[in-house]
Amino acid sequence: MFHDSLRFMEDCFVYVLGCAGRDRYLTYVGWTLDLDRRLAQHNAGTGARSTRGRVWVLLHSERFSSRSEAMSREWHLKRDRAFRKRLVEAATRIQAPQKPAK
Image 1 (cartoon, rainbow, N blue to C red):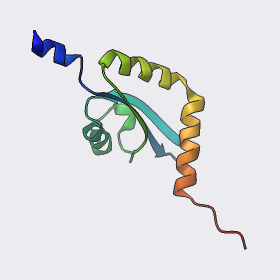
Image 2 (image 1 turned 180 degrees about the vertical axis):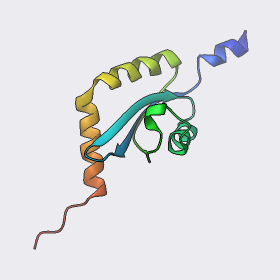
Image 3 (image 1 turned 120 degrees about the vertical axis):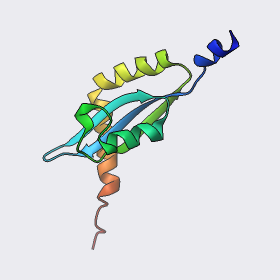
């Protein structure tokens, strides 16, 4: 009984990955129990089929205490293009700093 209750208290993560495509920046939203392992899987080509063959970086993550909360948040993030667009804009500003004014 005690062991079963622990199953509902594990940390779950929702994450947004980013990758520069040919003509646009791509994003991928998912959930996992182990964020580092999952990112490594995506970059090794053993993650979701749509992420294979690309190099992904972590743009955003959130921690939840249950799978149902994480899966609900994942569902919402997949439909929130404006949020993902802001993440991409912030990431591209960090990767390509502005030249100093003369």
